[in-house]
Image (cartoon, rainbow, N blue to C red; front, side, top):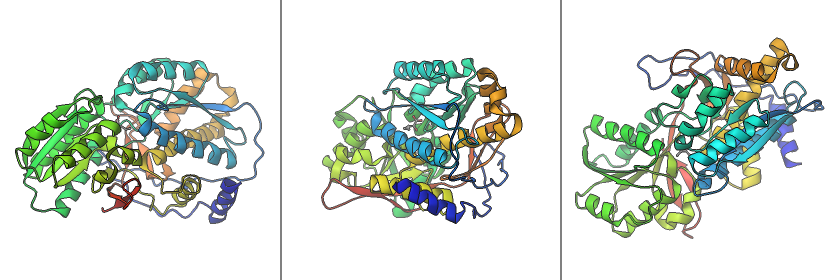
Length: 417
Ligand code: 1QQ
């Protein structure tokens, strides 16, 4: 009901007034630009008919990684309802097929195999890069397009032609957080870096953080390692605090990362803390509670983005969840959006029901790589050729700082850059 009302509002706004934003890119030495996307055209009131088109949503609904995956489920659910209310794929409904990957590689492989066998045209997932390196080759070999909603490690699009990501890589996003920390404390000299050695994302993100520290002329005083399954970080913390850091940078996941922050503060560390993408969720609040206060985290999404589609997404999210939407939900929404818009374009071009599933999947992959999209993340496109095909081209990044409320339980992400 409520979603309907908001969607009418969106229709009134026409979802049509996005200004042209220059988009610069990525990782590479040259800076690819994209054609400014056409705003999504919501066709409300269309009666949906025909066989649903299935899109797999294979993310972590259980395990520790669900602290991150739950936000993706919410973003995808909002997208499923939104795009069906906007006319589906030229009047055919989409059906999101949710399959829990849990937190490990085996879970991701199982979930991918299950949704592929179920006949999905593409997959949004998995949650972790660590899982993606195991499950994506299966989809790639089967010719099933994957849109990674949150895989930020180096090398994800390079897994294969069918693998793309909506989640900007750590190499682009993470340095912003260190720059923001220096704005807050220009006297930072010594930096202690911590990272989870058993996780592909954390091992990739720490390389970027360490390079950034060196480039900025700061002293990389120590690099401490841990496991995402660790709960006691006292040895590493003692080692690091002996070197008097003014900044601690953590690349881990939510539960371990939150615990590490908590223990750092309990050991008396008072300096700034930068958390990586694995700490980028309000679901760490129950872990570090009041001691989460002040963590600085780079963002590939801001709820303040004024584009109509973002403001519609934001309204729907806030109505359901009572707070501002987080990055992982926005990225999951945008991942579904890319499949929907590419399916509509392909249907307009050839008619989806003229294609066998295998050909549909291949044509969908080629189509999606060559379009641009006005998403809640801003205008995005993809590298469409070569080794890095499927890499996102996105222009807007931000930094937020966690502000905990007096109750020590609730808090928010306050944008500082
Ligand atoms: C990755 C990540 C995770 C921390 C996101 C949930 O960025 O695994 O690549």
